[in-house]
Length: 99
Image 1 (cartoon, rainbow, N blue to C red):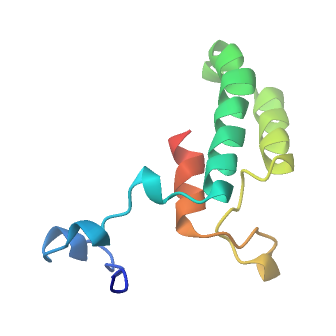
Image 2 (cartoon, rainbow, N blue to C red):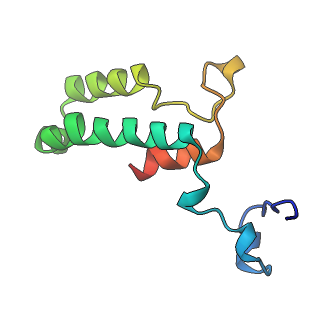
Image 3 (cartoon, one colour):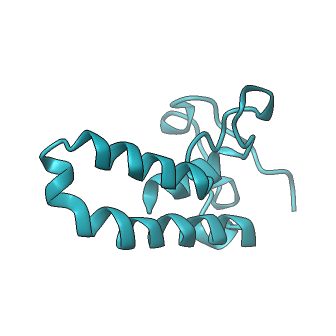
């Protein structure tokens, strides 16, 4: 099996791709799955029960939830470590956003 090609920007829209070039959930590592589950649990337990308060733009609640998200490693996932981030890959960042 050959190397997987990574498309730059919107190149995937105009370039032929083989099925092997397409990233699917079956390609997730155990780390990706763990990050996704952590983010999903956070949304279900912390965000959804407070959705109405968040709609009211309660600044204390927003700051509290951001702090909790940071403690769980859900912020700055693809920011390089030397700048205070976690230095994870784009897939990790995407699974956090998908949760």
